[in-house]
Amino acid sequence: MKALAEHDPLLEGMYWIQDAGACCGVYALDQGRTLIDAGNMYGLADELLDLGPLDRLQRVLLTHSHFDHVGGLAEIYQLASPVLYAHPLTREYLRLLRPPFPDFFDALERDGKLQLIEDGTVLDGNPPLQVLHLPGHTAGDLAFFDPRSGALFSGDAVLANRTRYGAALSKPDEVSGGRLQDKVTSLRRLLALPVKHLFAGHGDPLFDKGADQIKISLATLYREQDKDRPERAWLAMGRDLMALGQSGDAEQCARKALELAPNDPEATQFLSALAEPPHPAG
Image 1 (cartoon, rainbow, N blue to C red):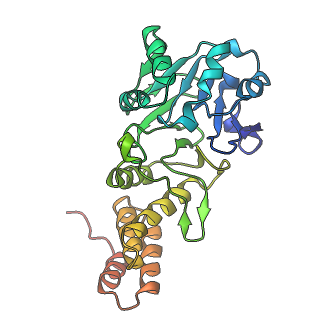
Image 2 (cartoon, rainbow, N blue to C red; image 1 turned 135 degrees about the horizontal axis):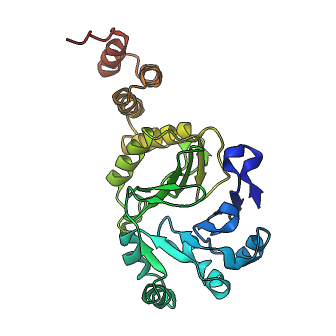
Image 3 (cartoon, helix red, strand yellow; image 1 turned 90 degrees about the vertical axis):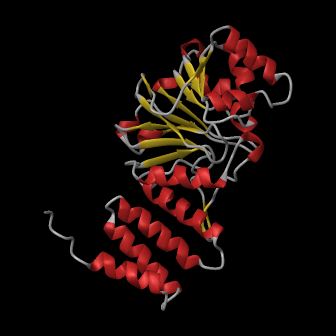
């Protein structure tokens, strides 16, 4: 278990329980009173006992319905009785898991232990968390943002790992409602969020470079859509950043596009437009 406050004191009370094999990592907040996802590994309860008795666990926040994020709930509910929070679409896709999990979630719902949350909800706690609906990997993907520290708990909507050609991307799971265009829209939305740290469902915690990883993820996704014209990915990224007023980063994207295609008229025009002084109001 890793204490995140070792890197940033604003992350006091937050811990990362490392993923292992076909399992996501788990984040414990407020000294173990809140979990983000539950992984799919035995021994999670033992890890949590290092933070205090398990009866202090008040809630588990699900990012989505995949088994590597929810399988650990079976162990947790043998020892504690937290409230489970999920998006309404995630609730529907939980019915697709193998038995006995559909019955398990039905029982939680009957007992009032399953609460549905939507985009824009603010969850009270230490810290308060903004709920973001970020469909793409599945239809019900949620992320949780702590404005105080700039920490984004992104599940599989954004991954923390890099590849040789960019960022690792989670594929849309069409069975669970995942759609590529939704993923593009969700990543574009995150560009406007003041993310500092990225705590994803897979990979190590990414400190201080969360916003960069979001940009690289979106650029990678654009490139996957047009592999024969990689300069177009940089142009699309540059336009997104320009729309947010991030002209410096937009210019870097334009120059990268021109490196790949020196005579591209769109890239040349875009870079020229960036160099023009803004027109005075009125």
